[in-house]
Image 1 (cartoon, helix red, strand yellow):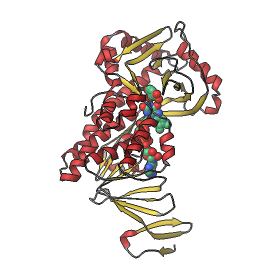
Image 2 (image 1 turned 120 degrees about the vertical axis):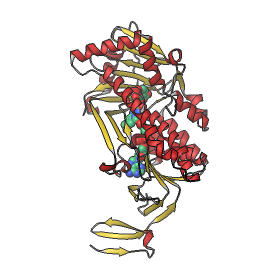
Image 3 (image 1 turned 135 degrees about the vertical axis):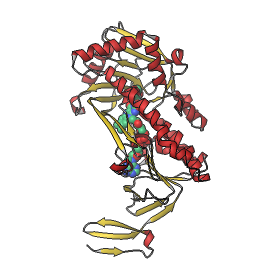
Image 4 (image 1 turned 90 degrees about the vertical axis):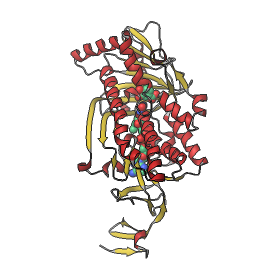
Length: 420
Ligand code: FAD
Ligand code: DHB
């Protein structure tokens, strides 16, 4: 092995493999209080909330900003998410462009029931795409002069069990870089390096995979419904959601490993029409041009504790839910709403109480949402087993006909208060 030394100060050196060589180079070096890995909703919102706590952060992201802002994902905000975004000055466009929905439609062939969350639990939800939340956060962070490092590679976390953790990566220009911090927060989703930096001996994980996936499409057509339709159907689940008065978002249950190439637009519209429309009187689904198509696998995953030394995990880095209850984005928001004041206290007054309580407090809501997402998923997706189908129909009828059943769904769907 040949080692080339490009710098004199040992602590500023970073080793990097270049072909057969291990090259040691001077790192671009920065210091901050909190190094945040990932510029998804969890990372961006955390940097915003930390600033309000008087805490400085740097955000490191592997993708480009354009990619992060265009990524089509979630679309439903719980009332507590909206309240939080309002409280921290991020609600203006959301209220102007988002749709307030009182509830959802729950249906199966021959029946469609409206569950009015506002009547049932006093609060509804807001339809506002994750892409828009991400753009609003990006603008707010730009206005505050937030430091970002986009398009980095090979992010690695170091010395997490000391009071001087640091993060190394290669910049978009190919230079090694290092950020020293008091705390590192892993907001890098389910495939990032933060989760895998926690040794197996220091955490426990729980996982469930489901025998189906979602085919999601975005279509340039006015929604055919005023509120979301969750449809049980013998052919499989279907969901009609939306992004604006001219853009619809629709999902179909498909087998795992489905290739989008097997689903030309005509087949998608025919399946959606069948599953959403069958036995629903004169209701019609209006098809339109599809602009995006993708297959989403479905999984539940929880890692606990959500802390390892000076590393804290938030959002998808710590937990994944299947999308049926629209909880993923809302859980990420709830995590950082707890974490920001905890880190504020830790870093400004050296009081560790809230930081030590973070994982346990966050996990209470995480498990509630994990259960709710599992429950919605197993109630609505067909397995092919006729006994399962009878149980699902019975459960759906109870939820739709009983105030107690409907209230349980409404309370979980519209969202529990931050800090639940
Ligand atoms: P993410 O949004 O995943 O952000 C993590 C960030 O970390 C990303 O920007 C990523 O590029 C970055 N990163 C990864 N690795 C590194 C690294 N090595 N170094 C630096 N940065 C890194 N939820 C719903 O409620 N409804 C939906 O319809 C829905 N659809 C989804 C579709 C897909 C394909 C996926 C993956 C998720 C979907 N979700 C949905 C879930 C929801 O979008 C997530 O729960 C939410 O994005 C979580 O936010 P986050 O910030 O924790 O993670
Ligand atoms: C959307 C996604 C969901 O998972 C859900 O349950 C409802 C709506 C959406 O993307 O609009």
